[in-house]
Length: 293
Length: 287
Image 1 (cartoon, each protein chain N blue to C red):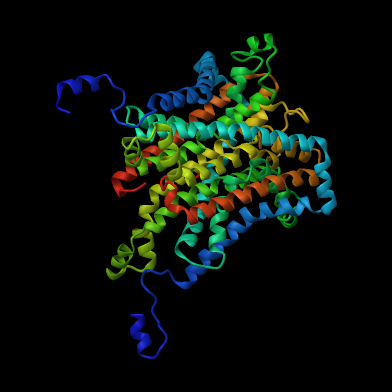
Image 2: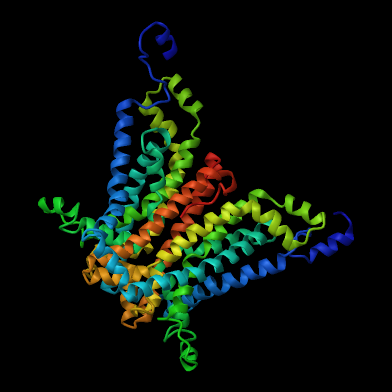
């Protein structure tokens, strides 16, 4: 229709029937942009604004505090233990689920997703019920002088729980889509099982694996609720960065709280950037069915 | 396969035969790890709860402070999910159907609530809406208080739930068939009629799923809420916080009771999601 109008020498008067009117269009774009700016971008911006509100020196001096450094070290340690643990599990779970058929598979997939439907606080609580003073093994652990709750092992366990599904839920649908033909070809040509995994499977899933590890790591370093329940908040010993942020904020030490928060916000931005890059550059090598959480 | 020898051999196998190795190792490891990390601790919670019995659980839920916290959590989570449903649809529509400067960047930022640690979200929302914050100060001129009231909880839960609605609805919007819109228009429908009667109905299952996901997440949310809520007992105290309070008072039974009720609510939401998706697959052929 519009082409005829142009051929007639006038500007097109009609818009395609499948387009919204300019007014509706601008109103919807304006609403969406304003809503995202107020609810998403402003909270991110104020982290950096508050951290640098007293200048760069005040910001940098926060990182001379031994408690802050201990919190950073503990966060790195927890992620270094929790992420590989869930990475190995994700590989094992996706291999057994995608390459074999067995009864009860969908139940198993649902159970793997379970930690996402559990409140972080409840995730912390269940470990208190198992290992805490009044818990199942509490008396036995106290007798043998082993501390899990209010100590680093509890923090690692709670972090593993809340980040449990990230790698598996990315790899399972991806490997199911890819099937097992390539592995079967490699195996019938004489490759060993381990070599088949390394040279056939791993290259096929590497971007999906990286995607899952990225999200797993972001959550592991930023987890607050579950870790807060099992940590005991002992300064310099059992405080991760998010817990240290809470303590500093409650002491009205805004610059220090937001300076540490800048580390976590920076991690979130890097994660978002890499995630967007993977989705844009390697979309066909990521699973189409993985829901994002 | 018809060979009786093979059938007899297969009948005792758990998995179908094939050349791919490692089933025993990977499947066994999966079950053991899942059992130790997730199932056993959760079973311990259920075991503790069964020790309380149904009457014990009801007694805990009926405690005025617990009842108030559960009500606050439930109703504000519901309200936040409704707000997310409305604005999430607009955001998803604008990001998918229109092209404008900064669209790709905004699209990437929709996932921010997934990536930003909840404690950071919590302190930055509290700073924004506190009486001398960027948003709090102008609102205070009109005597509107957000931070340290129930409205603060609502703001935090809207933040947390938004990506669930947007990310669930977005793929369905981009898959809407243009032929249906054209058919509707050629049959004489106005644009508003086409949108309302042709384009929105197929989005309903995705909207409902996004709503339920946002709601379920909000029920359990802790970190982003506690800084902005003020945490006044009976007024702005959420159920997850009360679990922490009970634990600090060594009231493990009370904490277990609240946790069990919260688990029941989130599993009900999960069940609803699965039912909606099963219905949607039958009705629309997609999730």
